[in-house]
Length: 192
Image (cartoon, rainbow, N blue to C red):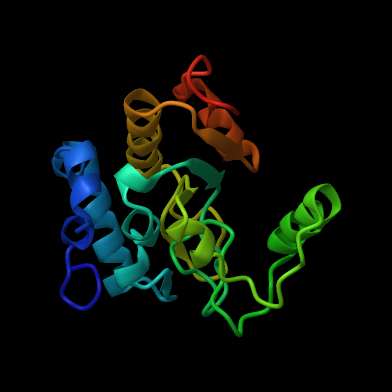
């Protein structure tokens, strides 16, 4: 079981995503991924982030029918208390990481947005911005430790589904692994 007795495939409960992704987490690669994450949580000598109930936080906070834009990052922050299941976001009370500080500075420079005092981006997600990492779990202090274990295939399916079933969205791809996803997006229907 992937932490607290919950299996990874049982943690995605948002109905519109379950319908849109129809059975994605029951495919062989996803079952292997579920076993890998469960094993890591039980046997790794270091914690795995984010906590199980936040692994699919991006999908739970931004239901499929609400998606207006997609911000794609790499993998979760790997420091204690940082990862919350939304790309680039950290809970209030946690120091704002440099990557997010840079985002805030660019928004301020380009649009005059006030730089927030915290890094919690749930407000963005609730307004329809899907804050998706290409990999959804990570070992503490080990960036990319869960890369190439199946998450990329799952998040590719999410991106393809959004691209195929919606139109007129804005996709923002930050980082090399995120920019590699451009091939999954129909540029005739979306803004990148």
